[in-house]
Amino acid sequence: MRAIATTNMEHKHERLQYLQQACPIKDIISGAVLIFTLLAACQQSMMVYGQVPGSCNLNESLCENGRCINSSSVCNYYNDCGDNSDEVGCSAMGRMTVEMEVMNMAVVVLDVAKVVLDVGKVVLNVAKVVLDVGKVVLDVAKVVLDVAKVVLDVAKVVLYVAKVVLDVAKVVLDVGKVVLDVAKVVLDMAKVVLDVAKVVLDVAKVVLDVAKVVQSVLMIRI
Image (tube, rainbow, N blue to C red; front, top):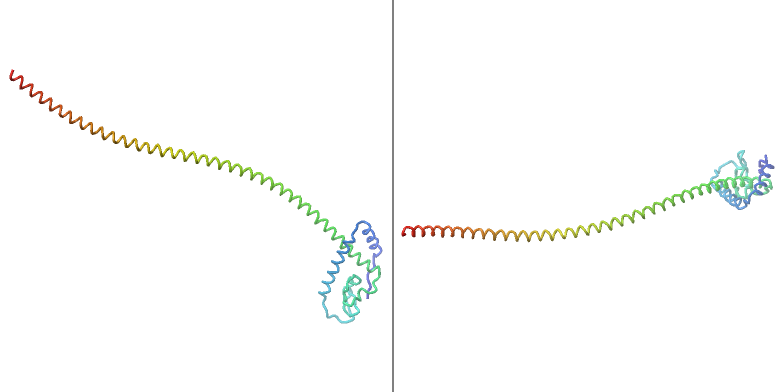
């Protein structure tokens, strides 16, 4: 029932000892075992029932309760059979096989973690560059804002001067209107004086004519 392939087992054992000496991965192994256990639980929950009791496929092992499980699930620290028959009588070499598989998974996870860490460093560097660019843009925006404030102040001064000029223009216009009215009065008075002058001239002509008549009468008597 528990016939487990042992080819290259000594090589795997040596590799396991080398990895254990090379890096402290007890915590990684524990985490990988947990992951492996969860995967095995998912595999068990998805198993298809209905096989003929006492018969299993070539890559499967028969449990004492008649259930068939994958041969790689034997002696994996998890009750895959449901009656724990797949975890009874496991040899140290069988346990080592499982540990070796877990070790391989842990190495892969470690490599992936290193890649993720490197990517994270790259992203962090890019974020720093973006932050520096953002600071430069912020400084430029502050300068532009200061310039805009100065332009606004100048515009306010120009507007104030324009209002003063407009008020002066209104005063000059009013004075012009007054001068125009005075000019009209003076023109009317000039017209009156002209009319009076015409009357005086006419009277003078009459007086002159009377004087001529008187002179003629005097000469005739003489």
